[in-house]
Amino acid sequence: MSTDDPIAEVEATVARARAAQQAFEAGGSQLLYDRAAQAVAWAIMEPDHNRILAELAVETTGLGNVPDKITKNHRKTLGLMRDIQHVPTYGVIKDDADTGITEIARPIGVIGAVVPSTNPGATPANNIINALKCGNSIVVSPSPKGVPTCEALLGYIYAEFDKLGIDRDLVQMIPGRGSKEKTQRLLEVSDLIVVTGSQNNVKRAYTSGTPALAVGAGNVAVIVDETADLTAAAQKIAASKTFDNATSCSSENAIVVVDAIYDAFVVEMAKSGGALITDDQRIIDKLWVKGHLNPCAIARNADELIAALGLTDDVPAGTQFIAVETKGIGPDFPLSGEKLSRVLTVYRASNFDDAVETTRKIQLHQGAGHSVGIHTAAQDRPLTLANAIPTSRVIVNQAHTFATGGAFNNGMPFSLSMGCGSWGGNSIDENLHWKHFLQTTKIVREIPAREPALSDIFGDYWAEVGK
Image (cartoon, rainbow, N blue to C red; front, side, top):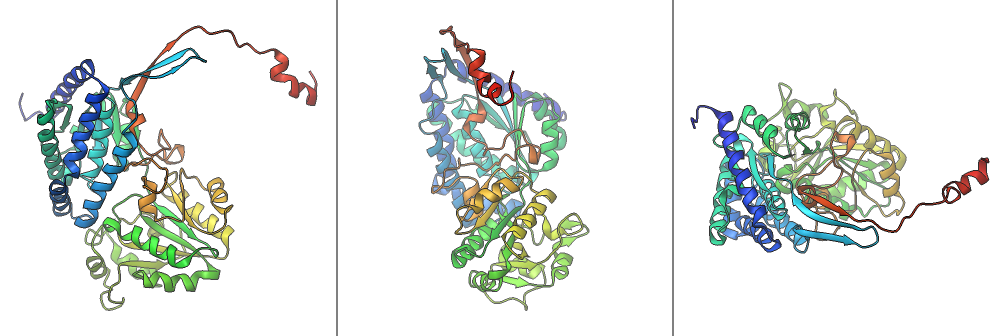
């Protein structure tokens, strides 16, 4: 096969993955699938591997920071392994005598996974673990800058596979540097596509003719109302906003603060490292260059961001993120969108209802379906927010980045890919997890008939309106 034909390379890679998957399924067992998943998890979590992968990711992408990458690689993988540890994904997984239906777990086949440069280690590991747990093979298409990290990760995985006698072809990546042509062919010849990251890739996935699980864009807005614990809210927002230099799609991009506690919250935010800037145009002029986010600001450490924004002499020592007060929302107001940096947009709201309306406008502009948050002591307000906003998740009194993708102190599945429902143009509104990598065959047996009388169905209707 000539390496001058990139499409043939992709097709050959998928062909090897398909052969490996068929053998994996034919000789499959729950133990085999579990061991394969454990091998991948340990390949990234082993401390030396984790550190090397984190360092390589930051070095080659220029995004995030090493300590937080290490934490992310560890906790996201550990949480996923907890979630799937006792989940049956082989053979009969449900046998219901009442319905007469027996469900048998079946792999999907070859998974094609497109992963972003923001998480070049954690995201592919998450997808690979889910795929193998359910008996699939997987071919990963990393972003060009993520290639070195993905190659290193696969090297560690293969070393673990060799200990177990597992076929390396179960986990592969597109050969060489990534390209739109190679990725497009992967989308077309896989059995299922999982896409995280570029919205261009998401759109291509959904129009490829292959079943797709692709996720929408994030642009998280979080309300701080007059009943909130302001110190706790400020600390959680700061920890979340600065984690891995705001590379996560779940990082707060805007906060909407009720007027009654605005000044007090700004004081608490300053204690947590947030410097408030009231000249929004000054930030806009530096954060965007020729209509694109300034690469010197994206996912950078605080000192690099502050220098890129020209704020070195204007913010206190120890500043960890920049909070920018603004009013506008929509295409003509870039601060109302995702910023992939330690820049947090701040909106004032006259009251809670006004805060809800502002949050709704932000989501309708960008990030619809992903998630919003609220810091409040009022029990009814999360429900109000959930009914008013086009969102799949309302995160209550938590650091948003850590909570949305699964945490050990909430019930969300651990994931790095958040489905956004129809609001975000997605086929799922859940966190992407193991069950999306599995299909089932149903054995359907006859049971005693359960046909209702017409009066059982329409009795109350007839009583109200007549026959």
